[in-house]
Image 1: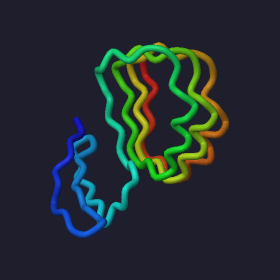
Image 2 (image 1 turned 30 degrees about the horizontal axis):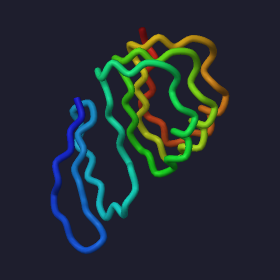
Image 3 (image 1 turned 60 degrees about the vertical axis):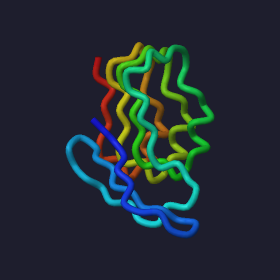
Image 4 (image 1 turned 180 degrees about the vertical axis):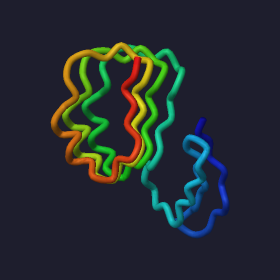
Length: 113
């Protein structure tokens, strides 16, 4: 489970501790960028939008336990700092796009079930 715990707010920046799979990650000085999307178990349906690739600051992405269908969009390769990507328990099909090879920071990738 992931959750956000705000450590402090000051000026244009804020810092946050994010717990991913039981491991705390302290992120310091975030400036108006989305670094985490956690939408597990929300009954989302349809394709994963290709626009997800525009969120280049994204580090943790959890889309698990929904009803996303079809393929992972190739634009996922634009997320160069992505560290954790959970797509488990969806209705995906097809091959994993080759662009996933560009994600050199990726430590956790789950497409099971």
